[in-house]
Image (cartoon, rainbow, N blue to C red; front, side, top):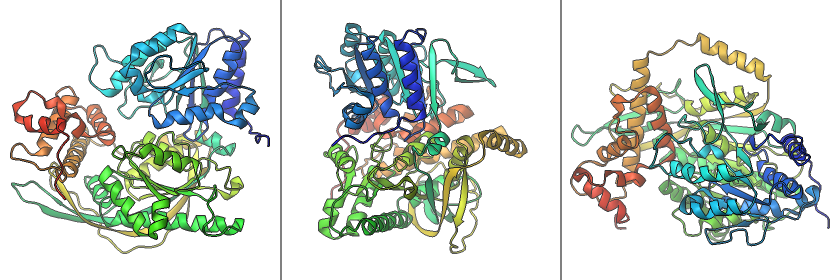
Length: 612
């Protein structure tokens, strides 16, 4: 049976036309191609298009595709092996997922590797680049920061240092990303920049560069991605706050959907994701998935036990590994034992079979539910994901866009496009609301309320009398009301930006000192939250409290600056770092300081856990 035909999207056609012009010698000045494609918009086909055309034209001999995680290497192999695209593009190229063994291509058209592998053996990959005229493909290039003079230490900086010689040696470069900004505000490696309004922005007209863009609005118009239906669940939370010496005081209950971000927003969210509210949101997502699967079975005349593709799956994104294990246990408890073993998997870095669980979730009808923390949020090609339970504390826009995109891929097994949409359940906190407002404005979409069930009355949040620089202990939380809103194509970009500028002009600016205080409080709360999570799992002897040690780690990570000495930009960068990283993994920075010697020894000894 012949493979089904698939039309190229506008950005894929643009790249095909560009490489055809390169092959004809009409664009000889182009050496770098930047593809800024909305998450879920189909950028994984772009390396196949570029490699097949450029190798056929004799401009390059090999393709080297570098991805940010090991789980994405298999997907890159699949992109080249896809029979439908082989027929549509008329190519017969294959690449292999390589480790750092000699001859990574093994006679094929190239290989796929990871940032980590290149950093571990940069000489091997540089030698391969020098041996063959190479098309270098760098996936999710925004993970690579531009290098400052003499910069060392961070994992991302090590990736950039190892990859920079490959950039220089490659014959042509194809850089892929779903966002052109980094959470820490730094420039992206290799990209050209210009100043605009006193700030650096990518220069899309730089000599030698060709830029291909594909926005969410364009993807929706071409039916390349699905519209998103958000289920915002409101609730309230209570927690204990304070130090060991001064005692702990109960705070709350505070409403998650308070009037704008405040000092209570993140502690309330931290509490909600670890107490009763999380169970309530998870139940909403679980039963929505079960209803969807039952309805699709009914339409197709299937029995309750037939295992087929296209019924819809649930992706649960947890705030940490301990919570992920708790969510996994909850989900299994809601099913018969045999079904629970078959249908629910967990994929975190602590699970030995995480990659097998990811592959089964992507490629087979069952399992239907996957619980993860961060392994599956970016680049996961699983079109059957129809529902996402966003039980994560991270609120950076690129991260949330990537997470939502796991459910916006069109499922070819699920019927007509008109009958599909993504359903994302999330806490109804003001930080998530700000994220939605930004993508509605910048990607030309609009929120259309559909219904809002009323919940129990709740007192408005009260500001704390001091900065939240001590630990919090979650007590309880509960859900109050659920509302749905659909993101669809809306007003023009120009009108949306004009409205945004007007709203910004009308908003009263906050005094700098108040902004700094609020940011310092948020950093302190996040440091303490990580300490609370980790302290509960460790047997701690006497000595400096864990929050004190973690504050020392953060200070060393940011040029030995205390929070009191940080600028607004540095405080925002610290917040972004804390949202994506664990201080526990950087305790080695305290090595040599006798005040923290136990922390360092325990870190390298594997951090002995509490018994039973």
